[in-house]
Length: 273
Image (cartoon, rainbow, N blue to C red; front, top):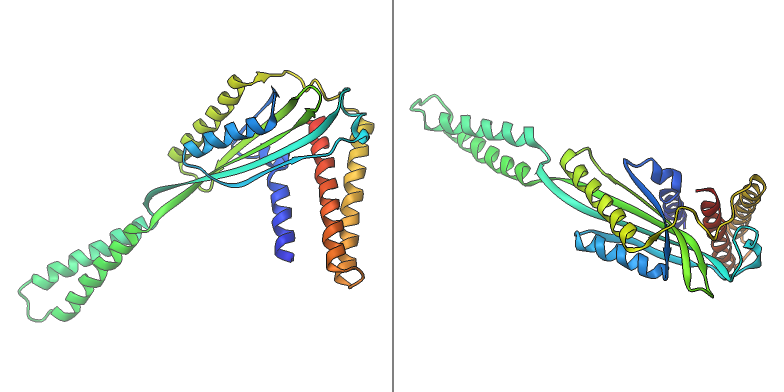
């Protein structure tokens, strides 16, 4: 259970807007789309066409609720959220460039010594030295340096059930696991192409027209609700650890609380971005 808790916590942290903004590549844009699912599919198809492996692909559409009318403008509206994480590996030169070169030189010297016409040289030792050095040099040469390019994408918005349309904010960030300039340049271009693709295909909205302007009191209310849910999660977890609730009850209540937390955080992202 601790592993699952840690994974969920890390996942939430990865897709926080401030965390995404800290990546070396960052784009965001407001769009008007007919179907949010279509936008997500467009992005997934583009990433896969470039050889990316999609590790995370989740979408949540929350139930309609009068609770959020104060944040949105009219209509039968409900918040939605989609997160995607994709990665691609690039294989560069040897991971041990100095080691394989040094071993190769040692082997070369041993070969020269082996064929020199001096009886005082230990030919068996030289033979094993150059044989072992060349084998190890080959192994180290074949172990390639792997640089991982990662792209995070978050789609948050409001879906108008009656009008069959959605105002969404798309946040894209990208980075590499190591500082390989060429790989990073390619990643930056690919993230920019993804941004251009959705900006051209869908209508850009200068403002989130379905979302009312944020006020301090509304932000504070959302923060209070998120804090309350977090406290309830901790309390429920303590009760389960102490054997005060059954596993079935724990799983049912925890699922509901996490859904509430995700819903409040999505609305908070919408009104504060």
